[in-house]
Amino acid sequence: MGEMQPLPIFVINLDVQPERHSYMMAAFGALDLDFVHVCAVDGSRLSPQQLRTYSISNSGYRWATGEIGCLLSHASVWQRMVDENIPLAAIFEDDVRIARQLPELLAHLDVLPAGMHALKLETLGTAVDIDEEPACVIDPIKICRLRSKHLGSAGYLVTLEGAKAFLGVTRAPRRPVDHHMFDPLLAGHSHLAIYQAMPALIVQRGREAGQDATHSMFSSVIDGNNTSRHHKTIPIGQKLKRELFRPWRQVVLALKRMASRRRHGATTVVVPFIGDGVLDCYVARIGQTGTSLEDVARRLRC
Image (cartoon, one colour):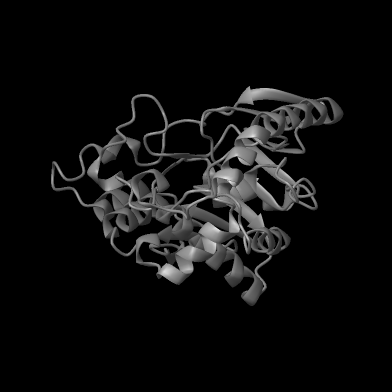
């Protein structure tokens, strides 16, 4: 790979999925970018005592072991940023499509909004609220303040102050990591300045129509939907109380969203992915023609 770029890039990857690491090596290599491999926490290997911490602290939320591992994995990178005084970093999970325009954005970080805590590079293809007027533009990407929940933690930039804030709220987490990062209406979160790349530069494989989400390379081990859930038995009185208050909480959240949209001049949009991922046209051939990921990266750099 080429000379290390100033911005540290971290890629979270389970040791049991080396093929994903190879894929990310090829994708970033094709963009002439280096990254630091972060060994993901395997939630299925956590001790009963570690798992018990989450069932007790979340009032009965049924955590998947993969969700716990995902949170601890991201938190390990944030802690590294604090320990090494890293002012800004990019963090990716290992099952993403990366737009060819990513290096262009990383080359113009000096124009990012002052006071930013995080910039979400990913889209889930759901409707979200963002400021109608962008804070800045890195052509063709608009950087807009995020005003509503937009889940997913597959690709984002985070500042040192953002890392410290996320570490604070995830020491006693009530929901999976992406809720605490990208839900501005979450209690104790509204003061954070979270931005959205519009259009997005990252999308998880299988999130878009026509993509093969069942490809063996990308069948998720860390995905909370595919791992066992750990929970404690909730007393019947607590269950009833939770269900009785659920409609009220939903109404309050809806009113908060409406107020936020009016106050900030926000608009509701579906954030699109900017275009083809850097390795899209090669993935289908990998494993069928004998072409290695390293070969793909070398060809794309030529």
